Image (cartoon, rainbow, N blue to C red):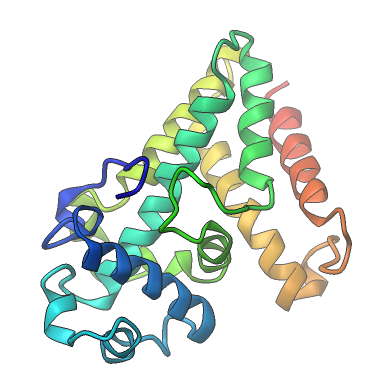
Length: 224
């Protein structure tokens, strides 16, 4: 069993994968396969082969591969909020809390021993390249009603509250932070694949520090 479990929206799964060895294996191998093949190339048939099981066993946990993708992306947002909550313990200055939160968002992700079944490095790459596919769909309104994006919205709400503490007169805290959360990953994607759209260089050893600096400038200049 993992040392810790994150509370996930039960509408995302047929059976909570965190509760069984097979479920945890499904999550672990799906992250590895999506990272390797991309979401388009990922199938339950390939996943079944990787876990030495059957497609039917996977369907007992997830209705389809889109639902599984939404689950692992939701897990990432919940994990980020957990990391931010841990990082701002005993911090009362909202400016400092906002700086810490933006730093955690931009930070290069390493394996977290608290969740040994999750490869956060691979999941981070998936979030950068695939997360838009969780909501750019025809069924986004239905998915939203079922709470699929609750983790992202909770994270946005938390960081937006820091903005409002700093400047209660600022009219767009949620707009700013939802944009910053997306920009943090888009800039890294652009650096890797569409370099003319960013000033960041993928081979720069300080790439993630640049990403953090960009977020800090964008957010704090907007609210000052």
